[in-house]
Amino acid sequence: MESIIEISNNIKNFCVILFEPQYPENIGAAARACKNMGITKLISVRPLNPDKERMLKMATHESAELIEAMPVFDTLEEAAKDFNYIVGTTARTGRQRGPYFTPREIAANLAPLSQDNKVGILFGSERTGLTNHELRLCQDIIHIPTAEFTSINLAQSVMIVCYEIFLAQAKIEYPTQRLATTIEKEGMFEHIEELLIKIDFILPENPEHWMRSIRQFFGKLDIKAKEIKLIRGFCRQLLWAIEGKPDEKKGSTSS
Amino acid sequence: MESIIEISNNIKNFCVILFEPQYPENIGAAARACKNMGITKLISVRPLNPDKERMLKMATHESAELIEAMPVFDTLEEAAKDFNYIVGTTARTGRQRGPYFTPREIAANLAPLSQDNKVGILFGSERTGLTNHELRLCQDIIHIPTAEFTSINLAQSVMIVCYEIFLAQAKIEYPTQRLATTIEKEGMFEHIEELLIKIDFILPENPEHWMRSIRQFFGKLDIKAKEIKLIRGFCRQLLWAIEGKPDEKKGSTSS
Image (cartoon, rainbow over all chains, first blue to last red):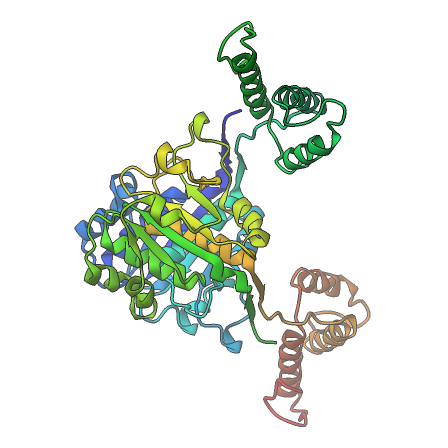
């Protein structure tokens, strides 16, 4: 089974809006984070230093297109005018600003809403974040939970929010390995028992004691079918080495 | 209600290990990400350029202590020797490397395990990531899901994994606002109806038609108790302005 990562088409309706970003490196790093997470639109409002070369260095080649195509606005009102829904982000959580939500909560809410609506995710400047003036244009506010040190780098904040949006929009399945069945495990235990009796590690008339420990040990392991094959191949080869009794194929673990 | 973020003490058992990081800025940014997410231990193995000044610039003052205290090892084996559990990270997902898991799955598994065990989270270099040689020391492998552009900046990867570990270790409650009760909403509708009749917007003998629309509109809103107060204050003041009938306190929205 291959990895499956299927992204909803709705991801196209998301756009990251950087309001007064101070450092071109952060714009570039934000572009890269967006691209990693399938968000292909980036807007900025009054960037302090629009040095494209410094942006591109951090964006890397693969997300350069977001920088090249980035609209730059003079006011947030202008930047915001075509969005149906805007979510702001804040590190400050005074009572007056709430209610605010975790990125995960917002990402879940946005999943259905983004089907027919353009959604902007708004981030403030590195120095001051968003003021209440900018937040008034937002329908929801995200606060990224942190430990005591609350100041997250701008591009890191963009990454966390985009990552949560991506996860809420994607179906993700990684390949797993099949667990062994009972009959496969019993075959392995018989093989192990045969070996342990052969080397006089356990007595043929009373194998239960040690075999119970061995069963407990393997029981904890969530042992996979292919691991059973490896262990039985090892037992077979050891028996062969001890007895000189040739198995059909020497060294094979695949039978 | 205040925000509640309670972090489990187990977070102290986590450590980020950077294997052959190329850029001191990434080490600094990784330190800051760790500190944001409550992880206070950082180790590096053979950093290509151990320029502490460049690290500290990105770490910021608040996470400088992670850089100042950072042990630097010559081999991964040495760095790894006291850990009970090591999780590697990879962007490459060949069949031979699996099984691998999402950061969220691993963070959930590590929550109980970190109570009595030292857990290392291992990240490879920006250029090559971790090879199978380093991954052999790992008990689990994380693959961060992405869109087509899979190459995540090192410090961004550290942030995503630390963020998931933090969320799995923390109890987070943001303040919410109480929804209005039925009686509060009915009081508001009566107030609105009185106003709309007064201005001849609806007929007193048949108010149902418009009131139904108004009920539907407010019904969608998950209207809060404090919003009801605002609306009723507004109705009261309008009635006063139209009729010249003085309410007890002019302009108040808080009664």
